Length: 233
Image (cartoon, rainbow, N blue to C red; front, side, top):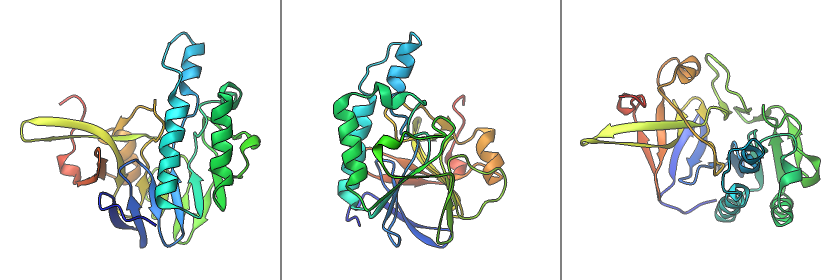
């Protein structure tokens, strides 16, 4: 499904997996592309509350998503929850963005919207099917990660970021958080922030600070947990 040398291939709970530098996960044996936390129309939502952000986050996110789908050519796309920032997000979308999203959904064999806490009822106008969880071989996909052991789980919600210190400087970037038994996806949306993997929320899932696959500009960097540091360090 991909020939990019910059992607990182690994095994997740016995299943072949590829972490893409743009923040999508590919499950090649299933023909699946997983993306999480798109948060369409987050900018317009903040604008309604008086925080003026550039109103182009949806278009930017759609452009990146379309590029990832074109690159990997999946048979199935699974959007892992919080695809829409709120229940009215689709009503605020520009008409061209509505058409582009509908075309993306229509252009793959199967599109699954996993319910998120921001969008427990994704808008039906775009097509696709809505699920709370989805089982795929030995994997289970859901939006919010389970606290405690959950082999085979792929979740989103926490927007993992890693701060890595070395050679006298520190870099902070989005990442996949994984111990190769379960995985928490990075947020894909243009305006989504990130939670440091040293936060206790990740320890409640993994039992410790997890290893990470850090998203660089052109490649994915595997980083051990011992190299990750809190934001205030």
